[in-house]
Image (cartoon, rainbow, N blue to C red):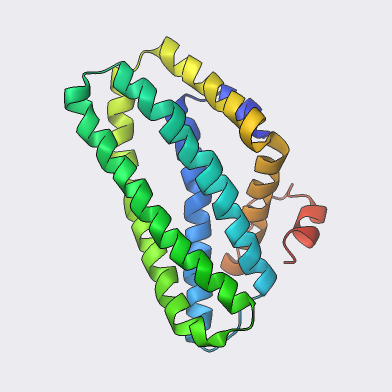
Length: 212
């Protein structure tokens, strides 16, 4: 389903949880890649570069910013910030910490892609650290933050937030780019996890952006 159409059919938490599914899928791929590295096998460098593109755009530019710039401010303005502020602050701190883990992970992936195998032991550790941290953060958002948001923000406000999400996707990221990245994620996951996720994934996407 086209990202913008899907977003209009969901409340903001539903949109973010849907994106979490794609992100977790990529974390599962990271686990598989890490296993290959530990066994002495090499990982396709174009796959690694596509993974970075997914996390740069889909995870950080799209997902993070919709939370930081749209959801969190609206949540605080419609609740008692003395009660909800600390929860949002914790999540924002997690975002900052996660960005540090990701920056380190990205740096060593790029070094590996430059044929610098000397960085491989560090890269293996980065795979595990980044994936473990992000999984924990996603779980805390879904178990703690999201239920509070759903119970404190009115349906009308949630509808407006979904519209704001779509506006952000259209103006700041690009719907075609988001759709491409979702297809890219499914293509990479099908290759590494041996899954049949979406029979309608365009072959051009799998053969072009992701040489699976």
